[in-house]
Image (cartoon, rainbow, N blue to C red; front, side, top):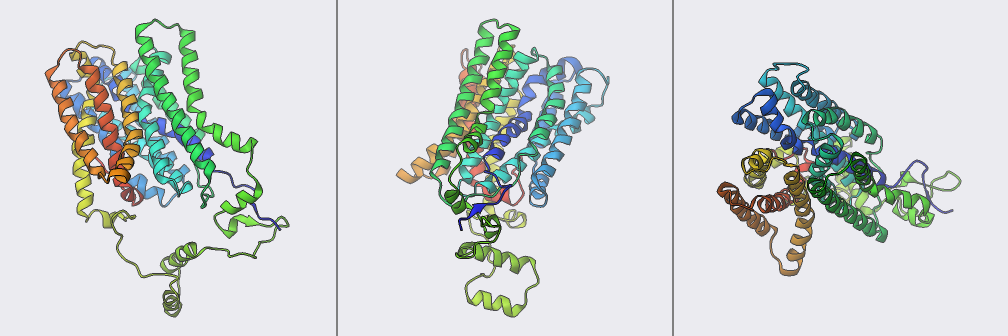
Length: 476
């Protein structure tokens, strides 16, 4: 009797396609330069007050301890629902202030609201990242790179919507984020869930990942091109809507993979080999097929270890299992393995990563928050091109960091930390270019900053991936 997959299981590619939309929503913190100038002009804030609001923007985006802990205790939809509430409440309060619906709102209320609003990105990102990395256990690095790349593109997506759909109005943008982000994530909530992963090598999986990466690159080029085109040539309303529609189609392109798998399904024999456990394999008559081993030795070790940790087992049984090699005594995790939070914070590596992250990504975020003010001071009133350029180069940095570093690690044994050092030095030169205000260097400096920022973010995230599983995101 041939083994088939139980009805109700589905490939994890549907969840990955939905995660793309959630990651775009999770990049809401990058929109601060699009409405920061309105906070000054409408609410009369000083530059110092605006800078402190930028700190609130960064704190909310990067503090993810609670989302990380929640992702290990609750299903993804619960984690995402908290993010939905945070986005609706936080951006709703800011919209009420900017639109003057509630005049004279206290400054501290706006500060707290911005922290809550941008903290939604931590809840969204944690839910989809952890879920999809578990759904693709053999391709965790590739999945993380793709999803983080879409977060890098989110600023360009919001810029496109802001300039072409909302008429460049900061008030409309805040209303869009108040309603649009929750609606989008509520719609995707059902699809972002744990699926039965394939534990065997699948040649088609590499092709699917390549298609997703190419489609994300096509989206990045499209967003930058249309943003520049709109600033050069007047575009009618109907053409703007058409361009937005094309952007939506490109965002939906990862869903072509599960559609293709539905129209051209793999053979039942191949699917049966990819089932992850005996719970997912039944015979055509509804009975379990017990002719082969139910669990490999590796999965048996895991299940017995979980039994040892979570259930009441007699000491004799434990000693017998240890003697047979089924379970092993607990030991502290080694470098590169998964750490619990308590184990991570006592490690020098954790704090070294935190300091490097603070200096590299923290300084880049500081410039990003003040990008609109920098552009205005240098005579560029429309900062949409600057933000779109930064987003495009940020995406390239995130996508290329892993590919380049992995190539040189394997071919010439050049450590990844060298690339972190190189980007840190380049960022110092970039900041000097901003400070010198040399004519014609603004766009070049912004592009280089986006690349370096993306490389720093991707490298830090890659090297601290074990800490993500401990439920702790590095925070600025």
